[in-house]
Image 1 (tube, helix red, strand yellow):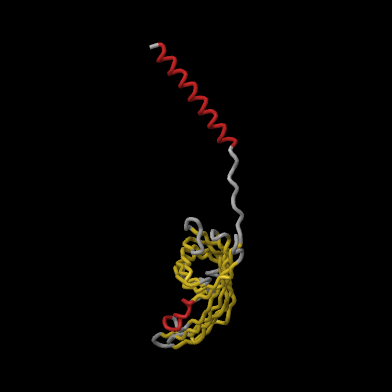
Image 2 (cartoon, rainbow, N blue to C red):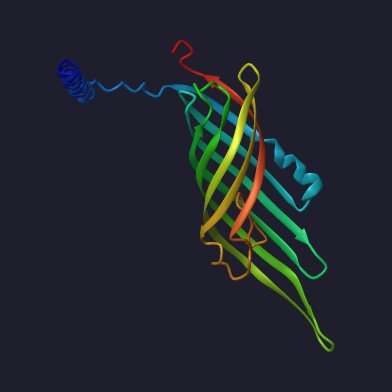
Amino acid sequence: MASFKYIFSLLLILASFSFSFGQEDELYAPEEEKEPLILKGIKIGVNVGRFTDFQFKPERFSYEASFDFNLSNKYFGVVEAGYSEINLEKDNYTYISDGTFIKVGMDYNMLKKYPSDYLGMGVRLGRADFTHSASNITFEDSHWLDIMSVDSESHNTYWLEISFGLKGELIKNVYFGWGAMAKIAVSGRKDAAFQPYDIPGYGKGSSGVNLGANYYIYYQIPFNKDK
């Protein structure tokens, strides 16, 4: 019985020593070096979804381009910019606007081992600069017919955009991309004397939150192929 107690005590001492050495190894273990981010390519894209405006939104003419900077297939710096023009004619008013927008942000690739394809989430900060005006605004009652107009006004709007999307390589260096986004107005949306019908890059001016989707075709200019 005494020998059993002796063996048990010896094992307990050895276990405590091994535990303390293990902790010491963890404390002094060298940190893994993080691989530096490398520019793997620059994608230049066109929003082909805008071509559907001719059928579904004939009052709007717009185009949009995108540039993304591929950092080790993990992070993507993104710049998107475009132009939008509205010419809307209704029975009781005519609305005209035109302007530009730019969005700057970052995407994160959630695919493991970071292949050249992309599936992930991103964030953008957007700004639109536009002018708009309305004419032939008609008010009718039982006795009078009143026609008025609103002179051209210049405004800007800021919004925050959260996106989820994918980009897949169709053929060498040619990618198709799809994205869904939620746009949250930050400032400037209510500064106009009358509500904008459509804010370039943001969407419906009367809404504090807009949902949308886009479809892009990209060409990637590759860099650092050997890294």
